[in-house]
Length: 172
View 1 (cartoon, one colour):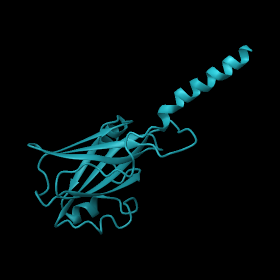
View 2 (view 1 turned 45 degrees about the vertical axis):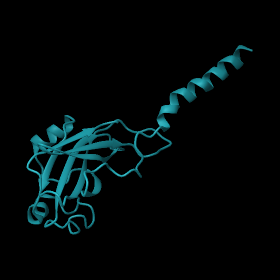
View 3 (view 1 turned 180 degrees about the horizontal axis):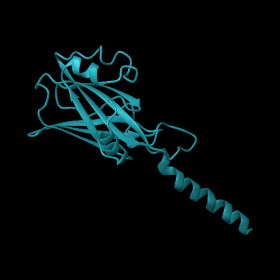
């Protein structure tokens, strides 16, 4: 008799514990919030795509957000490891109309980076990037990997920003 109470209670407890695991804070199908007229193409790459820099990697492994702005194709192709860049992403970026923002962050290898929103302010543009976990039936390793998000930004209302802020929100 007591066994039924325990079993019934464990079902409720399990449902309560797992209920939040299936809630989506933002759907992958939801487009990012952008200022009027702006468009953004994005591509996530697990791993590091920029030349080795001990200081930059230390900042990433300390969970700081690192970003780099490219306004010229030659600078981007010289700085980004071609074997690590998303297929045709650089070739399809029109640097006459757009700029490229490369965002790097250290988090679990199972996660990926996704643009949540861009805001225009007096100081320039503010980018908010979130980490996401893919749907899964299993658990994830508690490891640390550099993740890179490529953002090709086209803004007919302004040139490449002089002021730029990027924030990565882990587990939004």
